[in-house]
Amino acid sequence: MPRPAAPPGPAHVLRLCSVFEPAARRGPARPGSLAGELDGRAARFDPIGGMQNHTATLTRCLDAQGLRQTVVTARLAGPRGVTALGDGVRVHRTGLPVSRLRQLWALAGLPAVLRAGRRPGSAPVDVVHAHQGEDLATLPLARLAARVHHCPLVVTVHCSVGHTLTGRGPRVRLLRALGGWIERSTLRRADGVVVLTGRTAAALRPDGVPAGRLWTIPSGFDPALFSGGADDVFPGVARPRIGYVGRLAPQKRADVLVRAFGRMLRPASLVVVGDGPDRALVARLAAEGPAAARTTLAGFVEHGRVPAVLASLDVLVLPSAYEEMGSVLTEAMAAGLPVVASDVGGIPEVVRHGETGLLVPPGDVGALTAALDSLASDPALRARLAAGARARSADYAWPALAARVAGVYDVLLGVPAGVRAAA
Picture 1 (cartoon, rainbow, N blue to C red):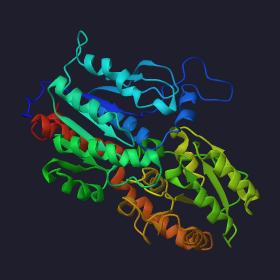
Picture 2: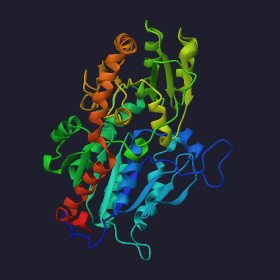
Picture 3: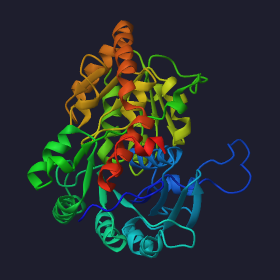
Picture 4: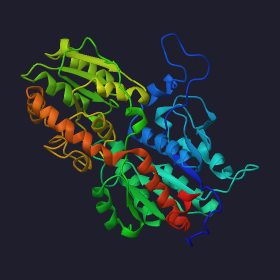
């Protein structure tokens, strides 16, 4: 489409994403809880992972930089409605709280998409920014939104269903076939495509996405969350502590970690932080395994508490079967944790084997056990990898990454370099 004239003031971004952090619970805090904590129903419905944190933190950072934003997303199991976020953000949560019909959020969100930028006193939409995960509805909705608002379309690929998604079963086959076609068709027509890793950028070019419309901007961590000290979250758990932090979902293969931990020869403790559809499987394996007495299942924690959790661990493990990037890895590095992760997808671009952590083949219980034993038995190795991780984390601070995303908007809107920042 022709490049539009640069907007005279802060750009207005219409952000479309199937997942976004749940709304804060209204009313007084429950006894023993924090005021403003996230809605627990939504957190249990779809425990917060990397894409939810990415979209929310990016939105906050761009709000701090003065951009206006309208977010349209699924309600999960939380309340439907419109809430404010920061100074210039309105978040529309819509759809049905039914996990098997979640794609209907896009149909329910269509009125909010059509009305965006048309309320009295509201600025027109300048950019539509879609966030593509393992879903089918976001990209068609985004293409319609860009056409209706006569503005550029930017797509961030959080998980390429055509190149990253693996596994078997009817859901995966449908996503790879129909979702892959939707993905390729949309990305070829998008004005800008943001990917998290160079691996994905290389995979998309043969699909017809020109290099000039591709930007590689990873996920990151919020330095404000990692700026202070924290109390020990697991005071009764013996060290060294091996931890998992994230969704308990088939993709993440926390079951592989529980099995590997049970085979370890060196003494250690395992802490599993998270919730999700594999919770019962992980709990059963932990209870039946030989290391049940040294395993702690901590459940779901809100993202704001993750830095304290990470600071209380000695090693973080991400044993995913597939992964576009794994944003928890950048947070672990910011916390100064050595990482053991699957050598799959974009993870090797984040974790440098022998420098910031150790890489193992996905699904290889024996290799994972050996890596855990080596770290548990060698404090000097843990310290060396931790120092490398902390140094490398400087490349993943969210405010700078968000400024790069704003730079993509500026290129598409014809804003000269430096003009937006000066404003």
